[in-house]
Length: 343
Ligand SMILES: C[S@@+](CC[C@H](N)C(=O)[O-])C[C@H]1O[C@@H](n2cnc3c(N)ncnc32)[C@H](O)[C@@H]1O
Image (cartoon, rainbow, N blue to C red; front, side, top):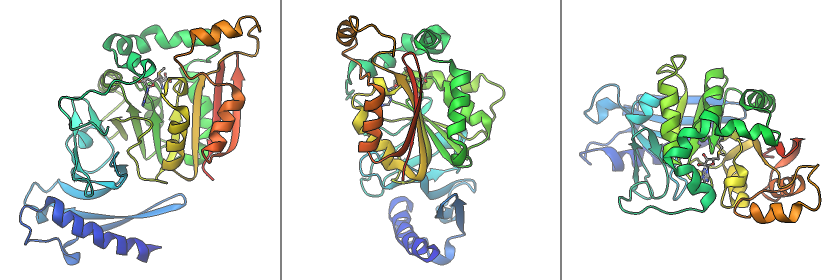
């Protein structure tokens, strides 16, 4: 296993030489690689090749590495990172990311790292379905944690604190690993997961620029966070997650499935990024609660037709169709928390 990874590292070195060295004749050789670090996390062991900055004439704190966390949203190759290492706001914002295959570069815009396919396009703004666009609005993003989400309790949602505790129970086996909070909104759960200190990294991920700005503001105004808190704020589409296949230990998606343009594509993508044994926990609104009168159902379906409200069996079927196993759920009125695992 270790030998195979070392062989893979040789191609990483060639890539590092090609991508970042200002003078192609001064290559990073094996002997000049100052550090190989072997990370062992649960069932996965990975080797990182890190070239210290003395090789590229910049400040000693800067390193170039093949990230184990982020991948190109176009080709899913691990991104090369130039800058300080670590999964925390400061180091990520000071880093540049580049795909060795596509030659695309990615960097932090305002308060989040933009890893959408369109990140480097200045004049193109892809308009998504209403369920995605609604949350891109500055007003909805501002109101979200200031009352909007509390309304979910009327449909059976237990409330953020209780939902967090329930999710943590399912994530026990993923502790110590990377947790991605997909469609995190303003980061109501990402911040709780990061503060728990139970994960090596928490990625707060959403498509909405304004939700991510709110998330960043909440983190900055909370003095229980410091520069070493393992949290990153990332913009990405759930159907194009910027992580290598089989690299993520846990995926959380609170109150999100009904907002996704394609729940099937999203869950297939979540299954792709989870490692074997990795855990997915989601919550959403069911199309009907167990007590919805039959006469109301057709009207409710029409009113809600822009959203992907599924039923309990449909969620289970989609998870199974996407290759997840060990499905379980908890239902209260229209609220469902479900979990499944990558085999
Ligand atoms: C109702 S909010 C849920 C926020 C938070 N997870 C919670 O539990 O309160 C739904 C979120 O889904 C996000 N979303 C919608 N479409 C998305 C997409 N295609 N990719 C990623 N996130 C998306 C929205 O931006 C929004 O922040």
